[in-house]
Image (cartoon, rainbow, N blue to C red):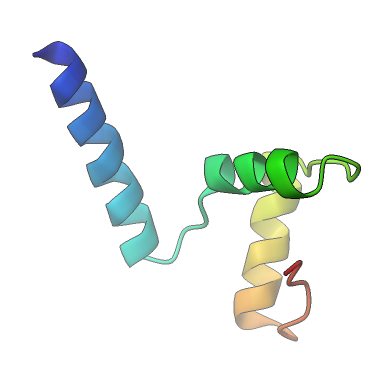
Length: 64
């Protein structure tokens, strides 16, 4: 039962972050490890800044 609640909590948290425009760092790390293992993974602070710049700044910075 607790694992189901924990899973639901994670899903709800991820949904809420996406609704308000916060980037999903865990999904980014998983993507980088699976798709670009030769590239370094940004820290959370670097990732957050890059996503904010991509959303509100020049729009550059997409990897795929």
